[in-house]
Image: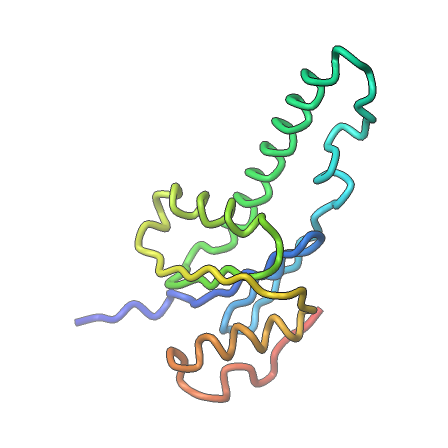
Amino acid sequence: MKVESNFIDYGVYIDRKHAFIISLNHVIHEQLMDAETEENPNGTDSTSGSHDVNQQTHIQNSRNEYLKKYCKSIIAKLEHAHSILIFGPSMTKFELQKEIREHKQLKHLNEALLVTDVMDKNAAIRFVADHYTGVTTGPQVFTGMKTE
């Protein structure tokens, strides 16, 4: 029986400004999330009386659309995923989990979701390595790791 060796275990860390995609084969992608855009996608102040409800609805719809696109851009990089650990302090991780579950090509995916404190890239890498210690083949997993 042939075993598929192209599948990769990933960790995706998400906070208010960053998403780190960490794979156990040392590939790290960093995407910035614009905090101002997340707070108010239109860049406008909603203080105009009767238009307030409509404007707030429009802003929320824009934010939701932005969030879906952001999650889909992360999912696009998980092409050969076997399992994924989604973690971080941001609520965005729940939207990412929802989008993963709706993505047909990732139905086979083993996933875990954890709420953590804010981490830098190196702490996130260690966290993913610790999570997959029982799954990986040994300490050489992070030898010669490429960082940005």
